[in-house]
Image 1 (spheres, rainbow, N blue to C red):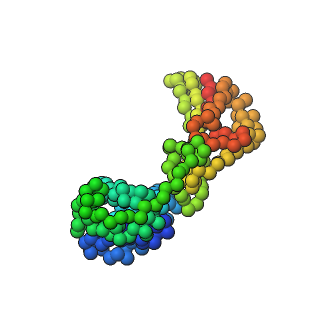
Image 2: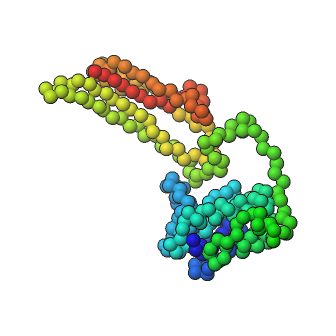
Image 3: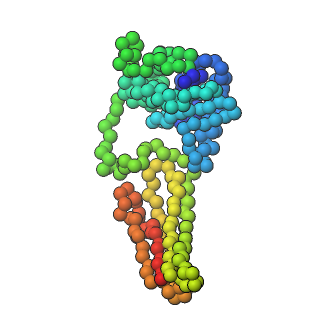
Length: 262
């Protein structure tokens, strides 16, 4: 595996805890991490692996923390991610909640655990039950307030909490395709026009999104002018407003347009 250093950062990129295991990478390299995060979030291509020159950052985001491992070797990246999640699991056993406050309140125990987790960049003991046998210092555990049920908060299973983008953006692409079947004599046997609306959403949290289609302009310019000329036989809409978790206000709906003609 060979991880050179491990960092725990807050959401602003400030280092809360760090441990240099190999000494082959300057600790100042972590200063390039947050600019890389900002860059990929703006591009909408968030990846758990980032590179700056010869340094590779492998990170996970947990609660309001970034847990980052740095390496310059050909490391086993899957093992690094397993190690980072085992770190979180061990911290949870000691502190109940792994947050910025619990890390600050228990920095002595965190350093002791980091020393036991890894030796010269290689994982050692990460089992919380084993660690609790010889790291017996009492930890400051956060009081966890009871959370309201999901039905009250409108929480959904398919979208995790804590999704954030620097800019709130929604991109809509209208894609149309024509399928045409022509005989050897040049006669049109069957023709079909299929249209779809594709959406790329980069919105923080769970905002309520309102989409409006100007039906008057749409049907006067397309249906009124082209239906008569092309003699379309069917015009149907597939309504997606009934899908679970999709919020639509008033009568705005996102539709797929399908037109068939013979």
